[in-house]
Length: 286
Image 1 (tube, helix red, strand yellow):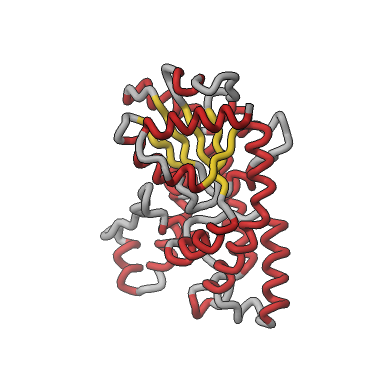
Image 2: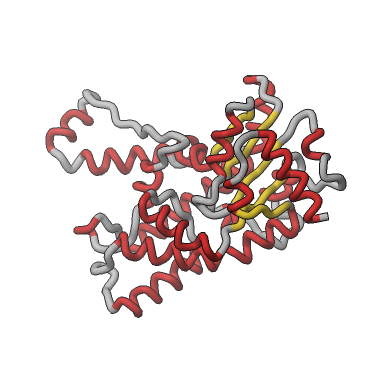
């Protein structure tokens, strides 16, 4: 949804906003602020972890529990119940399921198993994005919300084709929503990497990129797949994906929406600030 006048988004009776960009750029913070102004918050990562990956996550927990004779006996007799307690702000169950490739003694999993789980995530994310239209309608019909924010996963650019005008996910989003890319600055790259180090969130990597990155890491580190430090690899890969995703994010914004900087988003304190920023973004594009 592109606008001809700077005030057009502000003047809509029902506003729908889609935020996308790397993990850590401020999408969820804005969603949290707007909840105080009666905006419905649709978290794509939460939807992935509950609706589409929930069974995989719990089965993984049960597989680990079955390795304990005590827990195995309790599970087999239905004496205990294992569930995932995923929330908007705690996506650890999903991150844990996706895992990290490398040394099993350090918590790693086999690379091909990692790729298999990545494929599950890709399908789940595409479905969760297509669910946006359903939740936009449901937010009004069930809960009475006029305004809606879709807080996308950082890997949105990996499940759509930015240059395809008929991409089903992007067409569905663009029919009803203002789409805003939150662009990280070069100065923020290290900050984002540090945030990821301290609070790694679910990451889906384009499979071709992932395989090339894994092969390069093995060559540069001199490690065998079973010797790789999983944490070291995943942090190294995150820094590589910052560069990989930039052109894809920009392609989405150029065709389908608008671009805000991390600094502009960080300055938003409430709905009024966001409406002011929307005018800036529309005028800048136009």
